[in-house]
Amino acid sequence: MAITAADVSKLRKMTGAGMMDCKKALQEAGGDFDKAVEVIRKKGMAVASKRADREASEGVVLSKVSSDARKGALLVLNCETDFVAKNDSFVALAQSILDLALEKGANTLDEVKALELDGVPVKDVITEQIGVIGEKLELAAFEVIEAESVISYIHPGNKLATIVGFNKANIENQMAKDVAMQVAAMAPVAVDRDSVPQDIVEKELEIGKEMARNEGKPEEMLDRIAQGRLGKFFKENTLLEQAFVKDNKMSIKQYLQSADKELTVTGFKRFSLND
Image (cartoon, helix red, strand yellow):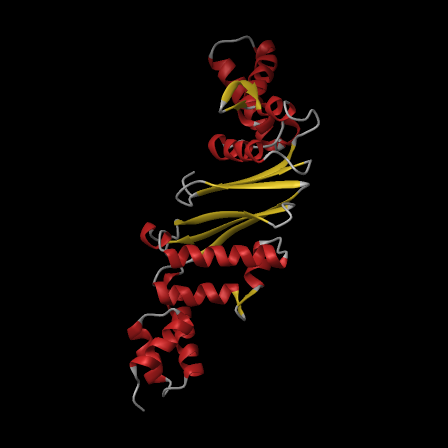
């Protein structure tokens, strides 16, 4: 049967595939739209297998907060080139997956991949888009935070995003945003010194001792010197102890307490494609 331009246009709207791919799929399927969609999906899977060993190091990092501001999510969708990463359709795909994940209450990457977007599992949607776009795509990360109040921040360019949870609701928006931007700019390793992973603490103590040893300090003083340097590490790398980037005369803890003595951060997530 003859394949018309209207048929090709219809299939393109259904799948997002290129005009020639749609025409070939319709020809192969004998004009049957359902079969043509299947042909395009299979092509996507074939391209995906060819692209499996390619590096998907570009992409977008997005974050969003639920309507009640009690849950935030951060999502990373990778591609191969910056050209694709800046494409509106690619960004829209990532945003639609993030919106769906928040709406359905997903908490893990596997749960997101299993969700259905317009009746198709997210993992299959991504596979199909590999065929359409011609690059390896990978849903690389998904993180959530639940708290009394959550704020999100996306740095211009969609390469860096954060979500931050607080122990109280109805926080002044600018203050919450300031803290989210602090996390983006200063990349703390933990909220406070008590939540720094033990392996990091041990590594910093060992580095501190080795530095002191190389400086010729007596062996009996190494532990004390290392503890002092660990304290400096905590001040520079834990969110609540970091100097506030907008006013380095106060820490983030002091900044929060200037509004409410009991206000604090309960957790945060940060992801950057440039780290």
